Every structure is written in structure tokens, then in C-alpha cells.
Length: 113
Image (cartoon, rainbow, N blue to C red; front, side, top):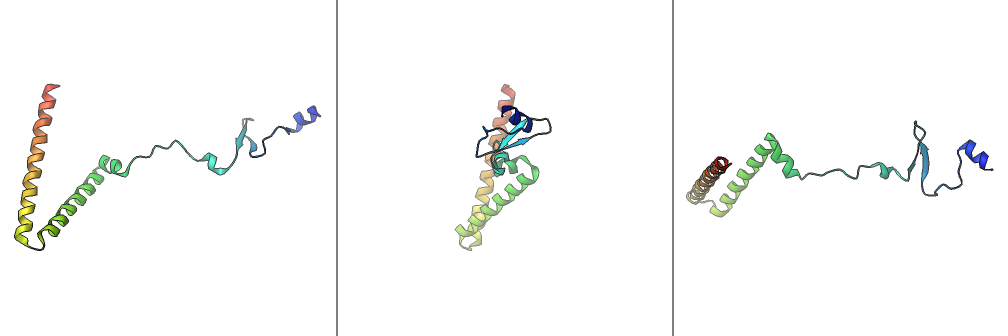
């Protein structure tokens, strides 16, 4: 009976939950369901990282940031244009100062290295 099993490829020791397949190279591969073929080690990157890496994404993030700042200014100013422009001016001055300080600090760090 052992010789009959060798000729036909049948084995009595198969697991009941999986099926045996033979690849073209003759190796048996065991598959239990179609889900076992899905990629489990896929590295998922956050969408914000993907947007920061491309120029179109940076443009989109900048546009969204400007729209958010203008929206908050409109809400805080309560449709009083003098207050809106005062807030916007203060925010622009703060943004320019922060950018200038970052530029100076980066320049000093580059000189040290």
C-alpha cells in the first residue's frame, strides 16, 4: 500500500484544513485560504508624510493652512474688517520673524559643521 501512495502522490497524512498544490518546480505549497496570499508586511506611511515629500503636496498643505488661518481670522473678527486686518498683519509679522529666526539658526548650525 505504501508503494501505491508513492505512485499517485496521495498521502494519508494530509492536514484536513489546507490543500496541497504543486508548483511547476514540483514543490508542494500549502494554502488554507485566499487571504493567506495577501501582503502582511506592507509598510504604511501616513498621508501627511506622503504630502510633505512632494511639491504638489506641499502646495496643497500650504493652501489648506492659509485657508484655515483666514477662516479663524474671519471668525474671531466677527465681520469687523479693521480687526480682521489687524489680526492678519500681526500673524504675518510673526510668521516672517519665525522664518527669519529659523534661517539664522540654520545658518549658524551649517557653519559649525
